[in-house]
Image (cartoon, rainbow, N blue to C red; front, top):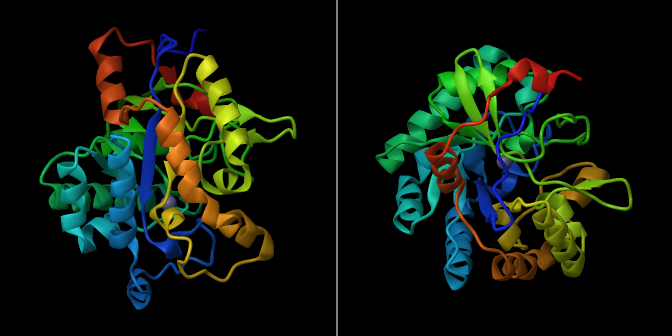
Length: 304
Ligand SMILES: [Zn+2]
C-alpha cells in the first residue's frame, strides 16, 4: 500500500519550530515537578528568551511555528499575541508538559483540550497544530491521534519516526503523511531524522543539536533535503539562554540536556541562514489545496 502522500518536491521548505516552555521543562523526566503549583517557585525566563529568539528570527526574516504550553499561555497571554503579531504561527505543546506514555487516555484528552482552550483564549483565534512533549506519542498510545482530532486539532508533529530512547514509532513514514483515525484524518509532520555512521538516527534539535558540530549538522541537513523534503528543526527558548539554571538529573540526562549549551546560538543562526522556511500551517494549507493522499490507518502506523 502506498502510505505516503505526494512528495513536496526538491524545493520543499524547512520548518523552524519552537516548543515554548520554561527552562525547568527540560526533558520529560521525573525531575520536572508534576505539581503545576510548584512551578511558580522557579524564576521565569521564557519571555526574555522568546524575545531573544524573535530577534534572531527577524534577522533572517524567518517565521516559525511556536508550540506553546497551555500553562505558559495562561501566564503570558501577551507573549502569545506578540508571537502571532510578529507573523509566527501559534500552536499547542499540551498544557502541563506531561509525557504521553505516562498518561491515561482521559488524562491526555484533558491536557490537550485545556491547552487548546488556554492558548486560543490568549490568542483570540484558533490553533491548528499539536506537538507532544518529548515526541512522546508511541505505539503504546495509538488512541492519541484520535484524541488530537477530537480536540479539534488539524495537524500533529509528535511522531519521532525511529527508535528513540524507548520512545519513537520506528515504522512511521519519515515525511509528512495523513493518519486516518476513527474520528477523521490528521496530518502528521514527523520529526526529520537522518541516519549517521554511528547507527544513530539524528533529528534536528535538542541534545543532538548541542552535541554535533555545526558542519556536521549542515551536512546532515543537506542529506535530508536531498530526499526532496525540508528539514523540521526544533528548539526550546532555554537553548538561546545558556546561563539558565539546571535541574538536578542523572549524569546521562544532564549531558543530553545541557552539554554544549553555549554552541546553540551560532548553530541556530547557521540553520536560519542556510534554510528556506515556511510554517507548518502554511505546509498544511499547501497540502490541502491539492488532492489529499489516501490516509493511513493509525493502527497500521503504530503496529510494530
Ligand atoms: Zn517540551
